Image (cartoon, rainbow, N blue to C red; front, side):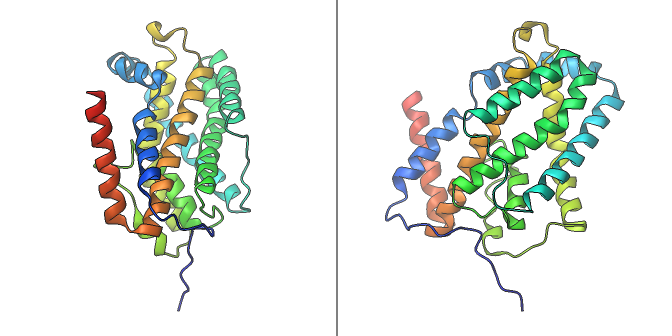
Length: 257
């Protein structure tokens, strides 16, 4: 009989999760920074630029993304302390690699893509660790991969996967292949948009460096929100945490209106 492993590291039990849930709701409202909003605003133009990318390039982006995620997950499995660039240095490093990639167009962008993918996933893992999760456990690393598919913790096609909190799983061979088959197409499509956005004339001042930093910060915020809610769910139950998070988001929407 297998023994279930709690993916949470020892953490004190907060008497009332309300204040922390309110903080997570605030982070959710801020998750899409100014640069991400600009990219969204000019989505139609970006779609046109994507159409000009050869199909072979789009296929290559998906292939490179899958290979990079597979290697990054494997590296994370060798120890709890995944690379830690720090809250400020991580976006700076992502910006540096983005600048190198953007310097030579599509060719150098594709060559730089594995580094960008690895840095983003490791930032997600560091966020999970900061929220009290043991990133050496495969179920936690699997959940980190799922962050890449989420537009937010309450997205209709995603939601918070609480089942992994009481599960024991492996993340090698067929299991990893099946998970990547679900994660990679969507994340590769996002990265394709990033590459296309770098060629939009109206975004000419937005370099590959700025885009990389914005994407890393965006996914790291999503990870903090997702794993923060999962931690509170493990401590206080899924239904009350979700209900209070939804209520906090509605309150913020009313205040903004």
